[in-house]
Length: 307
Image: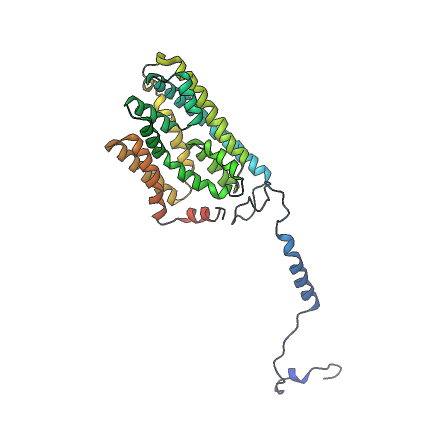
């Protein structure tokens, strides 16, 4: 072959001189070096604390943190969902105020209980126990047992709040209610991280303020409404909570837990006591959901829980 030099090792039939190792081109080697140098820059270690790109607040497994626009959109949805809770907390607080006055509570006693205890089901149960002649120790123990479902709420919120100071978490626990949990956990899941502004809106604006104002009104007007159930005030709170529970169903396990909790709660309530039914449904429903086979939606949700 004229004018072309070909290594004899490449010619057919030529004896082998060992295994040839082709070297990558200079451009490919430069590309590999540039990629290695850029990898540390891809880690968001310099994000400001509390921002949407803060790695300590973002949820592991999400392709990207929520943008500020997405957070604001989720807050607006939380506020819209909270309108029904404001109405239900007001109606429920009014009924409690009437019941407390009928049980002999003064306006100061009933209002203080709403501020300090701030737990609708427990306060209603306490009023019934007082009417039944229970001792104060018995009232405290029974209402604490009824509020044991808050252990589940705190466990669900804990991964989102792991980076918050202990004092902040204690204050948040004081204002944690069924409604605040339902609104805030749905908000946290939408944006993939905690949002204190959204939590305090759910806890204070939608629940604490209307509940205490309505309590004061109810205990003040006293016997002006002799039978609140005649006007449907006794179903406002359960209806609102049922609507929020439906919004939290994102997979098969949530659906199984909701159905099992409803069946267990109604069954125990009819067979024994409504307060015990609430506790049994709240504790056993999630257990049934956890042991049930997961669906596709459950796998997506597990990937969105902070570790």
